[in-house]
Structures are given as C-alpha cells and as structure tokens.
Length: 254
Ligand SMILES: Nc1ncnc2c1ncn2[C@@H]1O[C@H](COP(=O)(O)OP(=O)(O)O)[C@@H](O)[C@H]1O
Ligand SMILES: [Mg+2]
Image (cartoon, rainbow, N blue to C red; front, side):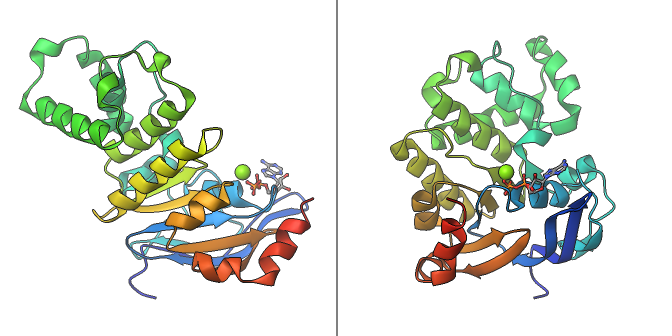
C-alpha cells in the first residue's frame, strides 16, 4: 500500500527476554479513526512509543509519508506531523485554557511563546491568528465557555478534551491518542470520539488506543487487535465483533 500514511513492517521491540512487540506490520491510511486494542500487556504502549521514537525498534521499519523514521528523534518525528499528547508542553494548571492552547501551538518553541504570554502587547498578527485558531478548536470541543478559566479548574473529562484540543493545535497529520476516554463518563467519552470522527473529515488521521471498546467501535473505521506483541486480528469493527478469536483473546485476560 504505497499511499499509506503510516506503514509498519515487521517491527519488534524486546526488553530483555520479553517480546513486547513481536513482528508487527500494519498500515494507517489517510483519514478516519483507527483503533488499537488488546488486553493489558499486549504491547500497545510499546508500539506507540516505538512509532514516536522513544524506543528504537530491534527489527523492522516504520515509514511515515513513505520516509523511514526508525532513526529519528521524537522531536523530529513530531515536526513531521506525527504527534502525541506527551510531546506537547505540559499542562499549566495556573494558566488559562486559552494560554495552554497557545503554548501547544508552537511545540518545542513553547518557551519562547510562554514568555510572550506575559508580553501580550508585543504580539504580532501571527499570534492573533493563533488565538483565533485556538478559539475555533475550543468551540468545537465545547470548551469555549472555559477559555479564560485556569486549566486546573477543569474536570477530568474536560482535561481530556483539552488534551485532544492541544493535540489538534499542533496541526498534526497523524495524532496518536492513548485512551482519550479513560476515566470519564460514557456520554462525554462518546462526545470526544464524535469530535475525532468530525476532525478526521478535515485531514487529520487518528490512531487511538482505547479500552472502552463500545465507544471506540462505534467511531473507528478500522481496528487492530494486539495479543502478546502481535497483531492477532484486524478489520472493521463489525467484523472484529463477529470474530471468535476476539473473545478468546479477551477471555485469556480474566
Ligand atoms: N520499559 C520496559 N521494560 C521492560 N518491560 C517492559 C517495558 N515496557 C513494557 N514492558 C513489557 O512489555 C509488555 C507490553 O507492555 P505494554 O506495551 O505496556 O502493553 P499495553 O500497553 O498493551 O498494556 C509487558 O509484558 C510489559 O511488562
Ligand atoms: Mg498501555
């Protein structure tokens, strides 16, 4: 598949004798929400960290837009448009929701922008444009009422929404999210995934680890199921649900 956005070929990552990721191949095509699920310890986080340059694969190749990114540093991968929330500057609880968005816009130049937050009068047209962008995104994730509130005052679910909003602010091509609906109520969880699906129509592709299968399966266009470091099954949600292997994998977890 030459037009895949992310192409992973036979990637392995082991820690001592543990094959956390064991010969994984997968493709993420442009658009949509792609899910990654699997029991605890099946290798999802290790796969994400390997894609993002935090671990170097022991074997195999990872291509983004056709370019091999195996040997790139995390910030170089980020600059290519492959983004994860942890690469963004951390959330500042005392700063407003809007300022936290602006800090995320510049990624690793965050320090410079952080300083300029206190020198607002010197802001140029460019920064005004960023504010408008931030406000648009905050409106879409329904955080516009909290623009001037300190981020520390947001609920857990709202912080998850802000995390997604900050990821979007970095203008990624591919946004990796690790459990965006964890620990929040099902209604808000569904809302977050609905937003991801909406954004995916505007040129952003999502690759999402999520334990809340009922929510993920409603919005994902494709799902990879990991088991013991391997991709055990892949397909559209309705086909995954209809596959007996899927239940065997999860029953093994009990
Ligand atoms: N840094 C590490 N050092 C040693 N073992 C690790 C490390 N990270 C993960 N593992 C092991 O690799 C396996 C996969 O873990 P992980 O990728 O966190 O799975 P998941 O995210 O699916 O729960 C587990 O057996 C875990 O104990
Ligand atoms: Mg994990």
